[in-house]
Amino acid sequence: MQKTFIKYVLVIMTSAILLILVINTVLNMHTMEAQQFKTFRTKIEQMVHTLENNRTELALMNKNLDEDYLTRARAAAYVVDQQEEVSMDVSKMKYLAQLLNVDELHVIDENGIIVSASVSRYVGFDMSQHDQTRPFLALLDSDDEDAYLIQEPQPNAADNEIRQYVGVRRKKQKGVVQVGFEPKRQMEAQSRNTYDYIFSRFPTDIGEEFFVVDSESGAVLGHSQGFDRAFDADCYQLGSLEECAKGAYKIGQDGRKMYVVSQEYEEALICAALPAEVLFQRLLEDTLLKLVYMLFIEAAVILLLNYLVRSKVIDGIHQINENLSAITDGNFDTLVSVGGNREFEELSKGINTMVTSIVSLSNRISAIIEISGIPLAAFEYENGANYVFVTLGAGELLGISNKEVAAYCKDADAFDKYIRKITHHPIEGETDVYQINDEKYVRIHMSESLEGKLGVITDVTADIMEKKRMRYENTHDPLTGLYKFQHFKYLAERTLRAMPEGEVAAAVMLDLDYFKGINDTYGHDIGDRYLQSFSAVMDSMPDEHFLTARRSGDEFCMMVFGCQGRDEVEKYLDVFYDRLRENQVSLSETECRAISASAGYACTADANIDISELLRQADEVLYAVKRDTKGTYGGV
Image 1: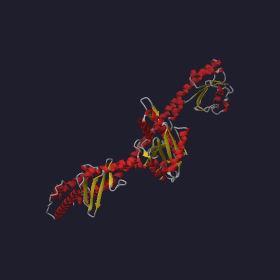
Image 2: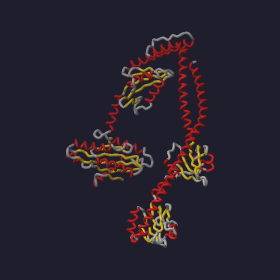
Image 3: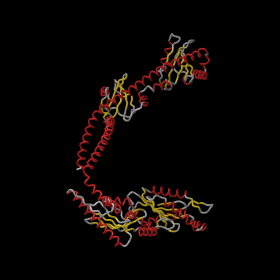
Image 4: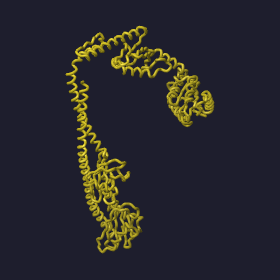
């Protein structure tokens, strides 16, 4: 009854919350669009204000610079008129240009020819031959002795470099004196008055983009993310943007729906756009936040109702709960007897039956332990029951704590999954033996029936470790820890048979150089250390490409596998020899020596070749290397 009541209350409250959220979402969507429109208009106004400020600053700077440049040009003309010898010497012209702080200084005669200049290669240039220089010829025919011309920055005629030239009419004779400047300040100021510059400095939120479209041609004049995109989407078209003065949704790049706001500025439209999903995401975040608040309130109401129903309805089963707690604590003599209605009586009868079954299971498990005659643990659980019976010591054998054992005793499904997890990976070559951790192995005998499962756990760690020790000693060399030769041949043969098509493998025979001399000179203990150092280098090579073994004495062998060709085999051998050269063995308190070894390898792509034949070929190559070079390797 309690669950039914709570379920209906939950459905009603949840439906009300969803209806409120739907209405709130519709209202909030309009509010968010209005807020975004206001934000876009504010940012566009800031851009326009920045453009106007930059334009005013540029005009004022140009006016001041023009006056300054004209003053320097007149000063140059005065010097040239007063000191004719200055214009006859390029070095003096350069000196005068430096004094006046101009980049170029030219003297033009009555024929429009540059007769003197601070740059020697300009001498002899005809001013009438280029559109950039031709306007200065008008000064030659002017009747105004103070005539001048200030030209806008543009590519010059000689080098196509951006320059600004100022020319003034000479007073003593017909001619023009011209000065030139590199207009760095003007160009920098002009660059700050472009849409690209404004966009690069203007902060944008996630997903926002700003762009400018020509009001006549519809061409995109600037974009906050550069021009590395196509502008064929609807949101960039002039006809669509004219409809966005009050904000509108248009299709953007890749078919995305965009919220766009436009504003006229001079002969262009400055536009701002934001993907509709960003607006929707904000709306979703706001809705989810409100949903969390409402769910919190709903949970509080449900908890309160649940408390009231429980305190008013289920007082009759408190006694049953107390009895069950006593049984859970191990007091199986507890008898549940609650009357008053048929349901309570049936519940009491079922609990008493369950307790009787539990006691019976416990007795059977104890009997199993007594019959075994060895330290072991047992467990049993019935199908459909939640409780699991385990004997003392089960936790230690299964590698779990007493707390975990107690938890599993109350959850048969979890215990069954844990046992299945252990028994899913049996030890190869053993029956019902499983590894619990690095230091423990157990044998689990388990029987299943229609009623449930019964299992016995015994510790077989000592037996398994002894078998592993014997297996290791049978397959590994005791001095070096490498594989013995016969076991190596078995593994190499198996590796060859499993080699995928297209790969190659190589058998490598190795022999230490000068080992007998080391043994004779420094003794067998040093010789053993020498062998162990060499084996350590072999063992350091990656297992996914190397099998290593000691054949006998100072003879060793390897298999290099999993390679795509002979070049890769030799690459791994080069790595091996590099490590060998880096490994210094201490022969005495004063002498260390790098290990020297010769090797021969035989490479094959045939997965069916006999390993003995491959080793024989490698041995022949080794013999040739020992005879001719030593300290390196060769191969076939």
